[in-house]
Image 1 (cartoon, rainbow, N blue to C red):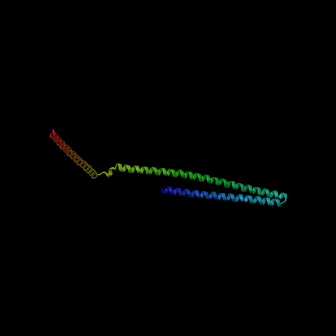
Image 2: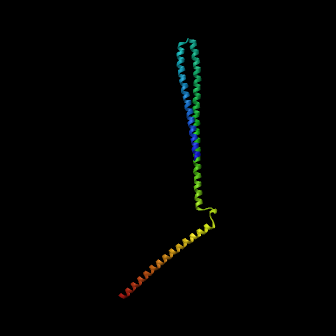
Image 3: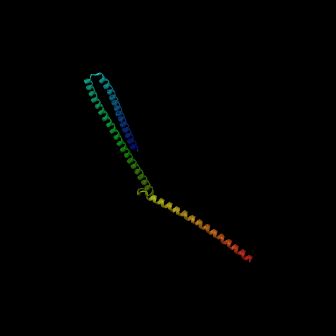
Length: 180
């Protein structure tokens, strides 16, 4: 159980690190995009002030720099997407491992419960001693004697009831003869 919790904490920390990396990459992308926009404004302003040939050279240089920055932005976006995919893969793998561990824990618990039930139902040979057998036989004998005594009491009660009924029957017969 502790191993499962430790693994979940490691996975959460890995997920948090990946999210921080993605956030950092997104911040870099935003910074680069802001730089591109600022350079485009600067290039337009500078181009308006320069003579025709110099403005074209300045514009070409700014365009190359802008393409390089756009390439960096694309690379950072690709890295962020790869980080996201890697994080999703890690989360799926972690979920699968958690499910496997839970299955193993449930199976172990079921096996342990079954083992305990079997031990209760049939004690192993090491716990059966001659004294234990003797004690069990004495308990069975005492239970049998108690049952015999109970049956004898019931038999006596039935005999007494039968005797009472016989006496009543004889009295009724005597009363009937006396009336006749």
